[in-house]
Length: 265
Image 1 (cartoon, rainbow, N blue to C red):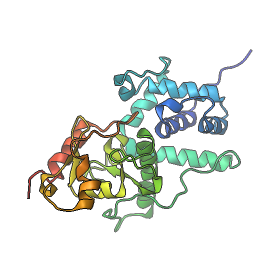
Image 2 (image 1 turned 60 degrees about the vertical axis):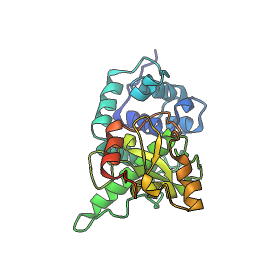
Image 3 (image 1 turned 180 degrees about the horizontal axis):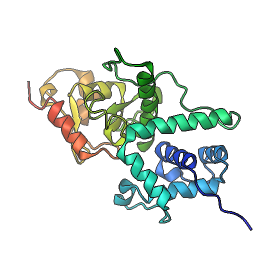
Image 4 (image 1 turned 90 degrees about the horizontal axis):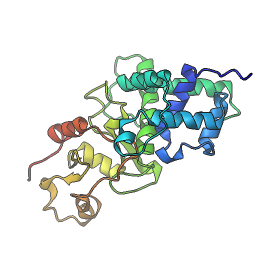
């Protein structure tokens, strides 16, 4: 008689990490990442793939889009999903610490995905007088945030479609410094090319609640061919839509109200 092994917290965290980094259509037992991470937690690829689909059944973005996962989400799935959505910052750090710990135990299965030192900590972040662990945890959480935001848009800029990852930024809708509770929430992020990220941070462009791009009228009359081709031509166009983690309207409203340069020059 086969004894069914319960899913541990570590198992759930690995599944949630994969849910963050894989596009919705990649929850398949033949997917290379599903195979590697299932081995990391001593599960079958089919069991991990099914867990990903069960998690999708809890995601309001998936449900609203009409794409449904399986309906077998367990009590444990629901509890850890709620915990993740209650405190993204805390949970993002736990995800990365858990993955790194499991990789250290099993270094031949997979490389640690959180070893890239080019972390996107905003340049205005001030760690003066704070413990080194504060800076370290911020960097750890930011890596998870980037993975979740980019994967939701199939690793491309949601405005231009640029897919060179080294040129992409996981941009914060509500700035990093303004609200620590949501700074690592993937629904507070947009994947943008470096130029669009800078323009978004400066309030030259913004996004409406129905995910259309607005370029500030302050710059509409500028006789700048590069500006017109790289930014102004997107005015009124729709974003490339995410497959999950769609930006929350209240975050977009804060950007338009507090950052966007809405008035003409």
